[in-house]
Length: 253
Ligand SMILES: Nc1ncnc2c1ncn2[C@@H]1O[C@H](COP(=O)(O)OP(=O)(O)OP(=O)(O)O)[C@@H](O)[C@H]1O
Image 1: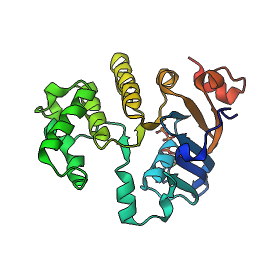
Image 2: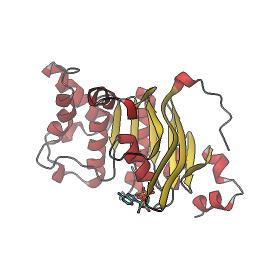
Image 3: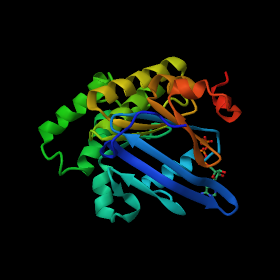
Image 4: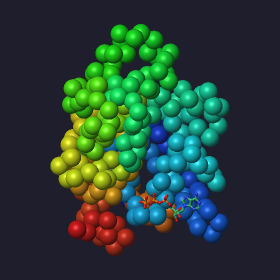
């Protein structure tokens, strides 16, 4: 099943083609494909153990695929050298499970960290301060700037992590289970922030989630990862009313 919308190829910011990865006899990815379009929220759903983390690890270079190609803004990342990869990485933001803030740094220092790493883009210190404040305003946490992560709730930590991921204004955001471990109200707040930020900056997002409510609210399009392939692609409305039992299983309450 495919989305009927015809998207010009120049609007594709991330493309995975025929990705394969096995561990011995465990064939996890058997020819997985995806295309993420400009300003799109694409949700990937798959059962536990279906290979979502393996796919993400291949995408961010933590794991080598057996075969297939991964292109980010039309650059095949498997063919880039380290320097070119580092430059490209500045265009990709990550929000992974757990907020992964640096415990010994204040919120301000946590946010300054990526700016220092990409200091060529952000030479001016005054500018740096304004960027940090804007990022915290985006997530409604300007007043937390001098606090330590331990002084923040789980939801606030997630918002700071989101601000940090977005501080370089990435063209692509990767979210791995953005609402896991959060209570329903905080989860809703995070989903709303993801939407606000996507609208404000036109970011394209790849969102891995088990959370059907999250998928319903955030997705422009969804891919179901089943049997190591992109088994079904479509809008939430299309997939959630599908007759195939393998697809239906995802949307049962
Ligand atoms: N480094 C590894 N060595 C061997 N097998 C691995 C390795 N990493 C993952 N696997 C296997 O790959 C399969 C997919 O794992 P993966 O972690 O990608 O699942 P997942 O869809 O992310 O699951 P969950 O939703 O529970 O996080 C599992 O069978 C797992 O045991």
